[in-house]
View 1 (cartoon, rainbow, N blue to C red):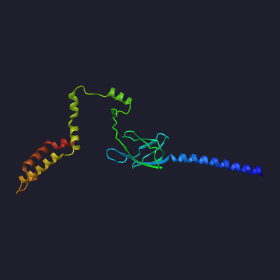
View 2 (view 1 turned 90 degrees about the horizontal axis):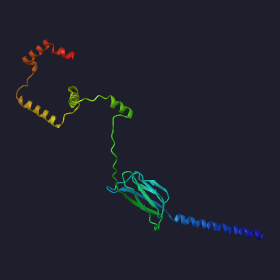
View 3 (view 1 turned 30 degrees about the horizontal axis):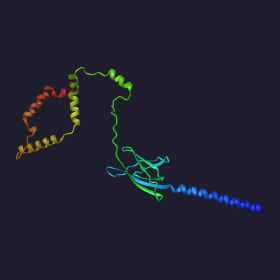
View 4 (view 1 turned 180 degrees about the horizontal axis):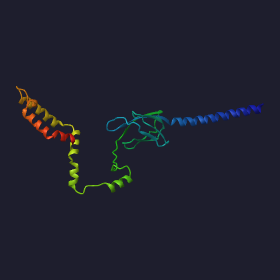
Length: 218
């Protein structure tokens, strides 16, 4: 009976010691944890930087800021945090290891970065095969005169002119011409070609010559 009581007492003591050690380890572990929150903003306008990547380099974990630049995740005291975002320079922040609380807030300012891209040539051919075919079969005028003549084709110029709207100067001239016509015929009736015998004579002559018929055939 005494042996059983002694064994039970030893078992209880061992369990207490193990629990105490684990509890001390957990206490030490949780003492280093902090809730790291903050907002990422731009240095030129103090506007939030959305979807910036915040990485804890010491623990290989992290998060992404939301649309308003806000972020929040669990980190450790003394960790190094890296901030990256497209259009901004990469920056770092070191969490102080002398914090007394378990929360830390930060307004992190990121500087804009200018990225120079290589020049890209855009061609109208989707692949090399079509480019090679066009390069071989395209007929190029021999001299500048033929090229200029093709560019100044009457039909093409007329079609382009119909598509171009009147600018401010043309609208102003047309408006002034209308005002001038009203002043010129002020106090009298404007002319009406329906009662003009000369206009009727020209019309009858053109009709007899078949001018309207030729226009219809064209």
